[in-house]
Amino acid sequence: MKGRKLFLAWLSSCRLAATAWLFCVLMSMVIFWLYGLPGEALCYLLCLCVTGSALLAGIGFVRFRRKHRVLVQMEQGILVDPENLPEADSLIEEDYLHLVHRLVWEKRQDQAKADGALADRMAYYTLWVHQIKTPIAAMDLLLQAGQGKTTEMEIELQKITQYVDMVLQYLRLDSDSRDLVLRACSLDDVVRQTVRKYAKVFILKKIRLMVEDTGQIVLSDEKWLAFLLEQLLSNALKYTSSGGTISLYWEGDGTLVLRDSGIGIASEDLPRVFDKGFTGQNGRMDKKASGIGLYLCRRVADLLGHTLTIASQQGKGTQVRIGLQRPRFEVE
Image (cartoon, rainbow, N blue to C red; front, side, top):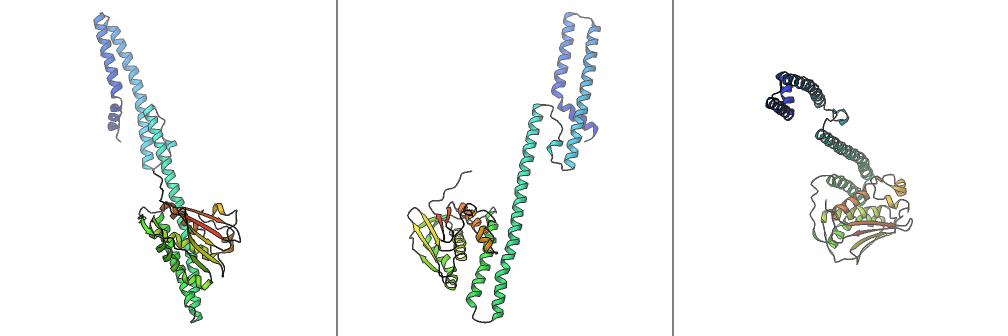
């Protein structure tokens, strides 16, 4: 800002004080005239007032110009550190400083969240790329081995499809448009649709499936609910040995139960099974475990307003309970 414009801006900021000063001077002149006081005394008073006011005005203008230059430099250098701001001279300026501090703090929080989300995505995509290579390599080996491997190839292809669905749903969970439509849907239809996808895996691993018709109509999003059941069923199949059993049944308290006779989960791992990236003892045994599946299940359950709990005993299987009562959402 040029000198003349800056001086006018300073005068504008001091107009109230200048008006009050002129009023006091005029009142002093009127009082001196009414009382018939000597003109020399009035001139002496005016000189003192003008000299003192000029000195204070000069100091005020220098401080005003210094603040302006600091703020301009910060703007040009895109500096957001509030510690570099000039000190406040009034309560209003102090309020503005507090506001700036608050805005900067909020910006840093948002930036930290964005950086964390980006790091999480990069870690997941890196892991996903390594995961997707495994079924592709397995299919390549099956093709090289010749005929008679159709079922195994279909299962590996299904794994690829599952991993692709996982990454797509992972992206949608953090996007503004989640395509969520809550409506009444048949739970039996969703269960049958899910079980049908894994029929060949059940046959190949010789795992017995026990499904009871629920006859329930639940309020949910059919697509997201199917994804939730697919992840849970896939997890049960992964950790259930040949000859084992997986059961799906309804409990009267509005809960769908998925029970397997697999290897179970260590008691010390149970509190963290829904944490992102946590694999526990089972994950250390299965080198390809990502620790993302159950994390996505919890996110989807929260999105739908359902509850999700796991009970397990190592060596005796796992029981997953999905609370499908009327969804309850927190009001923000």
